[in-house]
Image (cartoon, rainbow, N blue to C red; front, top):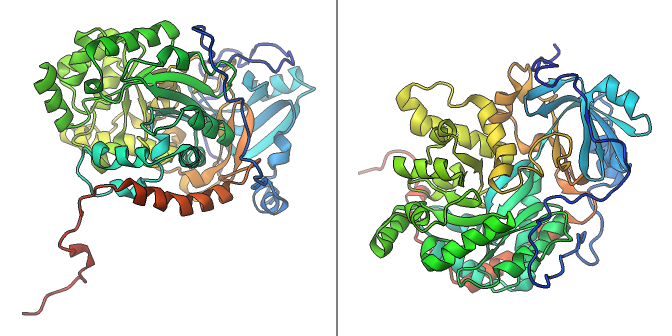
Length: 528
């Protein structure tokens, strides 16, 4: 039985969008108009580390994953995406109005140049290479609105720990990094993000004693779009950082102060104003843990978010991370100022004090995206957690059987996450003029058959193993989970050897999550 999707013509007029057929490759994606000082050189879009051998796009992989030809399914491979002008024809496209059949997408110069009915676009763009993507969905890549790329060596070090662990786990870990290991950590995190369908991640700033250009280089080599923060708690280096990456297509500079208590009121206000003038994002953790709220009350007499509002550091360019412990007054402050927040449901489950009331934010018109906080790089599991956390925390007690359904969480994980991290005009949806950051998702799987409501099915049933390809800036970056132009498996091997040594050097302080070793006891009765 053929899967049925949303109405094929709903809300898109004649179905054709285009900005012309020009062949120019130049596109100023997200370039900031704000330039100060002499500026520093960008990192230049490097691909792969020196000496890395190309991986994933081998004949073996093409045979196994791209040329199977079973029932006409998945008969395309990495070599099909090498043309300068691509007309992609999937079974379904996830447009802003929902999943739609009979649509084609023209990609050129790293952007979507046209989106419309298949017949119209094939007639209008006869010189483009047509790639038919049978059995696949073309959808926007996920946007991770809160990440820590240099914490990837920690992973399970945070499991079973008390909620506020940044001083005992994350700070020691990042302080133990040098330029080489920081680059490796960030590239490992970027690869994991891409494998999970994230095409953009907002890095909230590292405490590693390295230049952030190391992280930019890692993201560019991996092919991940990155909103890259520099920590400026001392009030220094912000202007230079915001002017630094003008030549990069993937790096979008941002400023960060980890928590409000790290800086003076003057520095907080000046940083917020600097970001507003630069059309950049000011990232800061707010109201994440009870301990941090109480520290703020004792030190400045106000809760963290309320304090930012009081000193004038809460504006439409502020991105508050977590915000799990908000009062109604603080929610109103967010709505009134236009500030954005990051909803991180997995982080709440693993190490939090509460689940943010994201459905209330949605109803109040508060801008928010979904973020991983570096927990796990899996976009589909993130949207599942986003919906499930709302259901368990708020929906069950009110009898809300919908909890936003699937559409809300897909939108907040893509276009609205892009808006939250300052890239709403750049990425996050399949639309003319936006960056060609997208996924090809296999629909011909048991989990999505039969299909009745694809949006909700993607939230609850899909997973990263169904992602056939990941594109960022119009370029194929991953094919069935692995890079096409650098050796991802070699990176994983290197990280497996290096990561544990960094952790040992960091002297992380962990609380034993099972001091009585109850998890090791065999089930059954004990004999008297």
